Image 1 (cartoon, helix red, strand yellow):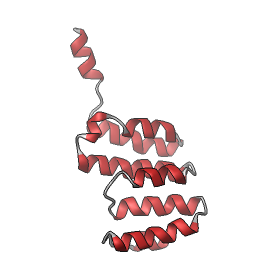
Image 2 (image 1 turned 120 degrees about the vertical axis):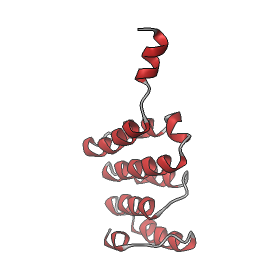
Image 3 (image 1 turned 90 degrees about the horizontal axis):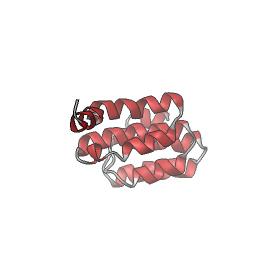
Image 4 (image 1 turned 60 degrees about the vertical axis):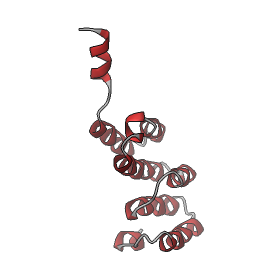
Length: 120
């Protein structure tokens, strides 16, 4: 097998990257989730980058890394899933002011809160 073929087969697919980021949440590997999110393959696919960012924000929430969730939030155009993940991160770290601010920001960005937002 050629070196070029070996490198190509070692390149992660979009699906694999998203799956790995989600799996990081179960094992609380927040550093690995951040590394995976920086893969160039994700940056080239905005819709998948948002989905992976949402998963990564959830990983940060589970690890109590609200400040990293906040930093990730500023790098994407959030949808309701993004906002729910961020509110979850703030709640888990008892950053109630940030959670309330997120609700205000959602209204400003015209992101409609759902039952998950209010139950978080």
